[in-house]
Amino acid sequence: MARKISFLILSVAILVTGITGFKKLGYWDRSVRIFSFSSDVPFEGRGGRGQGDRGFEGREGRHGPGMRDPNIPDSLRQQFGPGNGERMGRDPSEGGVGTGEGRERGEFRGGKKINFRNVQWFLAVFAAFTVIVIYLDKGHILIFKKKSAVKESDNYLEADNCQERDN
Amino acid sequence: MNIYKFFLSLALTIVMLLLMDPGSFYGLAFHEWAGLIIGLFFILHKILNWGWIKKVTVGFFGKCPGRARLNYILDVLLLAGIILMILSGIAIARTIDFSWLSLGGSRMFWRVMHTSSSFITLALFGIHLGLHWNWVLKRLHLKMAKNGKEN
Image 1 (tube, each protein chain N blue to C red):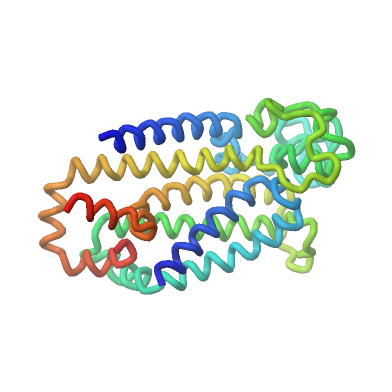
Image 2 (spheres, rainbow over the protein chains, first blue to last red; image 1 turned 30 degrees about the horizontal axis):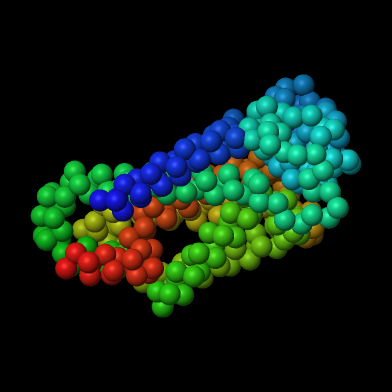
């Protein structure tokens, strides 16, 4: 029982961290951005400053104040930018990667090669998806246990063949 | 064989997470090379599970269980996601010269594609792991220990 409760608490913690990461990273917006991408946006290609979607401002290869690419994380922006991330302002639509929350001055200076700050949020989101599916799967098995047991006995051989990877 | 599959999957997960932020681990050069290599490892992962793929492909419209079908559809989506990720990564690569491929389209389009496909693919990876959690537990021998206790 204690083990189950500790797993439940761990799962809730993973879920809460995952949801926080999801918000911080602007996960949804950045996931579906491709579906709302319009080739008619003035900035497209190398046209310079655009007037349309703020997210498409900027110009490839140039990163300076006001010239922002929404798909470049801060860590890279700081690495390749002309100065550092602090000078460039923040785009709220980028969530955690762009909000600047928690980012300290001087990060990625002095040739720092490893920075897991964003990776830990991605890990949190990834783990949250996993936990959600594990519990959905458990719930599904609990609800349809009897039905599936009958079905599996009927199609035992076929099921065994197809589920070889799971065994 | 299963232990190889397990460590390959673990390596794929770790590298995928490191690749999510290009600046997190040794910069863009690592990101681009590792992104290409992860594609090869993904192919290896598919080869190691080729028997299952073959059986479900043949029995997909037959008497294959729903769970196997769900896994199959998810795997197809993952494959599509990884192909899009690598293709868009090639189109926007800076440290490796892929200009000879002339993929067409604007860089901004490929960049948005790269971000979106990688975010969606990571979510699919999480779902994939969730659906195979029992398999993972078995590899970690937790399942066996649990069964032993219950018996």
